[in-house]
Length: 417
Image (cartoon, rainbow, N blue to C red):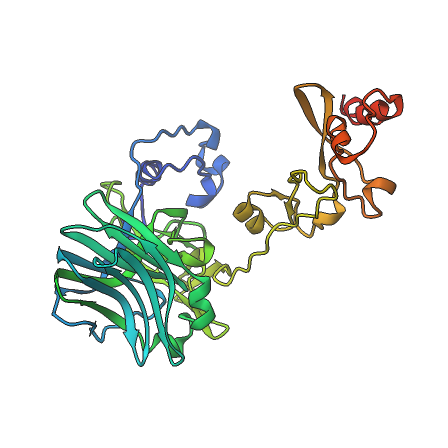
């Protein structure tokens, strides 16, 4: 058996451990008819769950040593991408502890002061030092202290014995003062830590950020569709989720031991420099092209994803709670703001919106009404009909028994039937 050969059953068994619920014959080359097996004949069940969480990727630790005394110790070790973490063991916490990135007159630090009982994110640039965010915290005795940088998002975490928990995080205020994705800025920053009087530190670790869970698994393939397997390990890519939204994630290459599917480990971290910044684009595919001795990478350019809040037209009845009917014209915005995705190229203002129609007391039906002119406006944006029972509070007549009003309210319900 050559290094390119593989057993179909071993691959299926390994993919089952990842919870894959649909695999077609094209993954292994050829069609289902050619292999004699229909995808409908395959059955999968969950035998193992894998939910990795590592502030520092196990194979990407750049610093692991005993802490030295000092208000701010610069290690001189630098990450090549703004996806890094520094963890510090506090054996005796009675003063100040510091961790983060520093160098060249620029620093991005997370601090905790036991005297004031506050955790902060401090940013130092040529313009001076600024505290961009503060939160009250109570960390007693020995504990773990960590600062994570994901893109321009800085998160401070603590571990008091129950696992890492975030204390505070900030992105916008950091980005407004410095862009950590800029190679010129990133080239100056190295891992740093420190302590004040009354605080004793133990072990210090630093390196590339690991993951707060993974998603988007995709097998690395040859150009003809065969899976890429080396030394009995299946290579696949996954998105390493960060402590935030799309921009805080990055791409990783993992291996799955086919003999022991529970052995899943990250072997590479991929970052991309484009548009003058270093980004963590992800959710892509890697194809091995033997004919030209190369790997082909296809990625989604989500490292610089810009979000817009869903449209929310003003309510025309003062004093009343507006009826939420926000929509989004792209799936990323919809997911971020819990809105409805209209489809590619759709204009949220030109689509008919859901409308509440009161049929009887205590019951409401949501129906879709086609755009109309007049009360709904020339562009067809519908507004919620005021509750007749509350019109009197605005000095309007009570029209609950008006036949014309009742007919208008019941038309959409009849159309739906």
